[in-house]
Amino acid sequence: MFDSSGREISYLRVSVTDRCNLACVYCVPEEGVEHLDRKAILSFEQIAAVVAAAARLGVRKIRLTGGEPLVRKGIVDLVGMIARIPGITKVGMTTNGTLLAPLASSLAAAGLGSVNISLDSMDPERYAKLTRGGLLQDCLFGVEAARAAGLPVKLNVVVLEDSSEAELAALRAYAAKVGAQVQLIARYDIHGQKVDGGDYDRPPRCGNCDRLRLLADGTLRPCLHSGLSFPVDFKDIEASILQAVGAKPPSGGVGDGLEVGQIGG
Image (tube, rainbow, N blue to C red; front, side):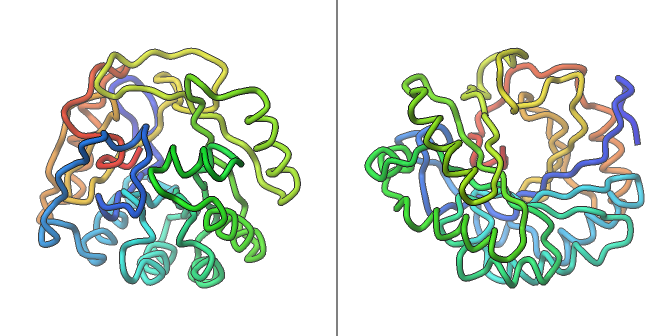
């Protein structure tokens, strides 16, 4: 499946909820966000139906996001449903890690193939400030439980204006200690113009973008930096996917009123 710019679209990011147990400063505005009515959020069966249709069109990689995906009850069951879909070769998850420790082994057994964990500081006070109340130790327990379960782990580190070299060095040292990788992410404003550049691992350059997003309310987004949105028609899911892929812009522009945490990053 290719978009109008010739990019192969093989990666679907699935937001399973718009809720989170943290409120990170780069993800949620200080005044908070308005959440979806729970009745508006897709069921696991609907999510699996979209993933199956996407797989038939050539999607091979799924990443479960939120909000925070681990606040969704039954998330282990959803991982198993998706992992069993023919054509899907990799199921990953992006999480803040604070709820991961008791679930890591079950997620791995269900078919989760990797996990990206948000971790921006090894200093407990700074971590609490950046997450607006999170406990660093809960995140570290999650990282270490994931590694013990055999899951490859990437630490998603958002580089902020006041991030220091010492802070980044401490994160790299911790990653080396537990056998994880560090992935540097540029802090970016999805309500501002997308700009490629900088020495960061993410976000990807537009020319290499291979992804589509399914939001928790059942709308497809072809670009994070765009207001383009296509509701899934469950009578013809493949047509909805093809419509969204066909509308994917050559490069990112300016997003709409949704925040990063509501779109799934």
